[in-house]
Amino acid sequence: MRKTIVAGNWKMNASKESVDSLIKDILSGMHEVSSDVIVCAPFPYLSQVEALISNSNLMLGAQNLNVNSKGAFTGEVSANMIKDFGAQHVIVGHSERRSLYGESSAIVAEKTKASIDAGLTPILCVGESLEDRESGDTEIVVAEQLNAVISLLGIEAFNGIIVAYEPVWAIGTGLTATPEQAQSVHLFIRNLLAASDESIAKNTSILYGGSMNASNAADLISCPDIDGGLIGGAALKAADFLQICKAG
Ligand code: PGA
Image (cartoon, rainbow, N blue to C red; front, side, top):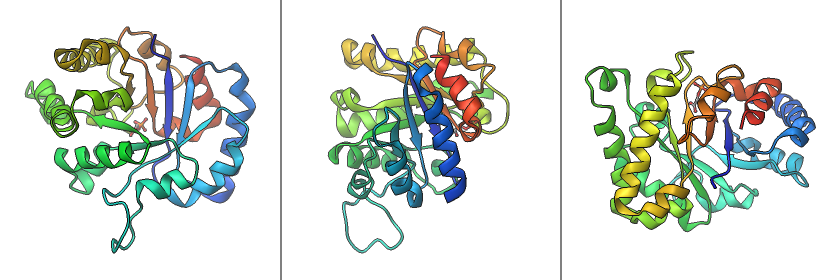
């Protein structure tokens, strides 16, 4: 049985004060939550979140990493540094990284490898643009993004990867994929993994992301191949985030 996972992606939204109250408010509702819950904080706040969530079942993640383990890479952060602050997860290949920072599927595969090598669980994001969807290329795009990881790391790597399907046109737009649209791509992803290894495919958690909120989360998460959510905007409000966590 795959456990429901809800991950909050705060993106570049935080201050010491907001992190303090957001985490405290989330923690106060966690006793009603049975899903696994992860908060992915910007790098400067990892330490603060680490301290706030100690002795709780809330888990910590980062939002990006450099593929190198150390060295002359000014401004960059390695997987080991992220681990050093008690994080277990890292988002890899978010569409904002792919589109704004030129991360190709090959780079995303390298980042996936760097996270796994350091003992982090990557949350590997895949998803099509509006143009891809309108030209009927959703499956081609998602397959290319996944195959880049499979060809570098082998299917076995998916034993330690969480996949997040995030249609780019749904991210931050309020345009959520319908449960049918999302389920169809989730099933496509699971079948693609199953073509290499059925049991790995069955055990891989595939989260949906893209304007998931307190009102639509339950319908999405109840789809057979949707195992939780990667939440942007709604993860910044404790009440909404907790509502989503409870939907699992
Ligand atoms: P959103 O973002 O929930 O604000 O659409 C999701 C994401 O980018 O991970």
